[in-house]
Length: 366
Image 1: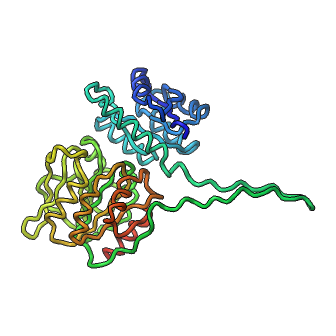
Image 2: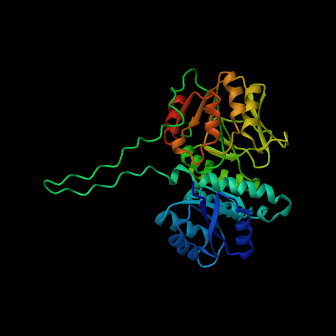
Image 3: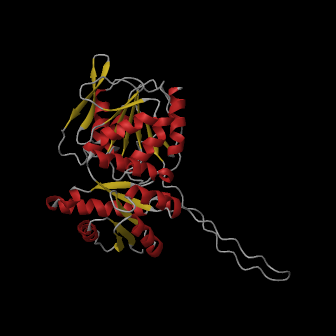
């Protein structure tokens, strides 16, 4: 397989060099660098990279302006390089809404103490995002030239059946209506949630708890952004608050969100433990706390994301009788977390993202 071709775009010569060095791998090739958005557009036309790492703040044409042009003119995978400031969070969320697939934090890219982990994360994101189904659609056969009378038509290319889906469609959710909705997602999740949640009416009769892998400086801005476009109320979760019907709670970055039952009320706890968890917040930690503490019927969903976070927790929920739903490969930015859950046999229904709001409305009769 040919190496993944990367274009690095940043106005800082140091960052361009740092990213170039961190992307050195046998299956990855940095084919060029660009110093601003206009330079990037020229280099994309010349080099046709598979994926672009794109800084936000640049002279002449900034990252968001460049991203709009890329998606309108030559759509491809884009990985944002973002500041962890409040302004950086807003710009990054806008970039994800415009079509960027994911981001890496810019400050931590400069921290030599964790450079190995940063390099591994960066390379893994480039590998996954460059192969995203969003930019690798099946191409149709080109039209064949007409033949003259008596002329033998050229042979048609051999038909290639589309690759079978990695997962088969499973039956619709059945059984009693859930009293709690829990969702886990990672890479591609911000865009997925921005598509899914606005389609839910304010009459959603249950609380919704969401773990989205995201830095702590991003989750409040993300919740506010969602709240501005949704009928349901969306907020960053607060320790000790009661989980109310019609409200969506986003786990704060850097803390686990856990479900607790206090008498007849469902409450939210936030904790730094377990500190050994690969992700914080963790989908597994949320799902396991629900399995251990929730006496009610639960609907648990896993959307797009790298890795397998959520699978162990979904296994526990399924053993307690929960309804379970996973996003289909065809709509995932990265088909990792849903695939891991499906392969463990703990998923009741598989569906593309565009069908999920309808499934939820039908299940909750709203």
